[in-house]
View (tube, rainbow, N blue to C red):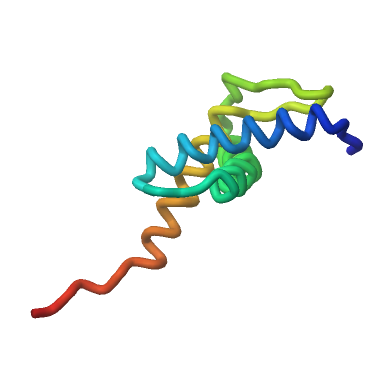
Length: 96
């Protein structure tokens, strides 16, 4: 897959927005642009995979340079990934 620089910038922008929305839905606070972009791409990998396993459609897909990017499932995948991270790295309760 060969991407032009403008297509790569569009992918990065879409991934950052999807990652930020997904993180905010899962309770992630104070994430940066790089983290949001990484979450967006992680969600773009895991979200459609989960949707295919559950036989769900892709209602909102953006085509960039001939390649699809599933917006809804990217947000869902990012939210699920952040929720799993919260479960895995819970802080122990303070004892007085």
